[in-house]
Image: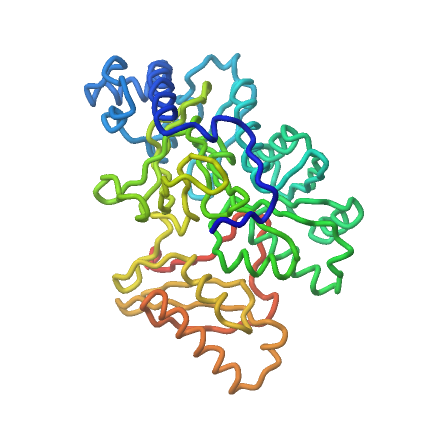
Length: 439
């Protein structure tokens, strides 16, 4: 695939380094990072237990000697025991939501913030953003890194920002029309909510000036991209990041949209088998592991993200030489094991998008009433299918059943629900309720 969906533009030279140049740069930065984390008691102790001294890390090949860092490790060091600098040097704090336990806090020096803005500017430029554009950011502006990361990235490009924050969809659409916004930043699930509002209110495409959208914060499928693009008449670009590593800006799509380019001058990426912890070959799915190379306030070594994706080291038609990552297909800790079969919510979404008459809103409920797993998928119907006959609705359920079985190999109970009856999300969508943990 060599066609460009937007003008092909590259932000800076680090995106086009040769493999030898990149390896040498990463090796030098890794040595600096290993020295820097000697100021962090957690790493000093972990290195000591592993028999590692900074002198033993000389090249990139020595990376495997270093211990992994996990979410649990970060929670145990809450709030700021992972700091590598004095608190007087910290310019800003962010953190995870803490919805599944103790939150994790992250810190940035003034230089960290400059690096972060530049990394976001890279993928925004790759995705068509120009200084003349205006960007509406419909992310939350709290501890969550998404809103601020994209905000400063947009400003770094030279474009203007409309910091609309999350929620209040009627106002979001009003701003888009009144301000003639060029690009939208939000989660893909919230984009669906915006699109739904536009359709329900018969707002024509020409009332909007929207050209692009940059989505992050949650996994989404290629089918979801097609649906949003068709409904809104825009081009959608994928980007990836996580607060523990830096926030958005770890990777993003270019004009080719054939994988997300990882900023390898700022991060070393590995892809491992989550069970054996051994590397998997290029193109094979595994768990992504990141080591930060530029973070001053809170560097991180071999962080296990739990995100499942694959890596492609081949140079891209856009001219960038950095490794590309696939879409995140799920998380190893979000993976459902149903009757012994591994199932990701994204597989259900993929199946539903193949079936006409369903809206892309769903909820997976798993229970074990009699020692046997039972999975129910609640699927929202479109207005047209909701007014269908009982026979047509049964046919729709059968189509959904076959589509899910075709992808997962499992039969699931299909429950059709009325339009707009499932919860809408302005942040990360919650698609699974697993009752087995309570039984």
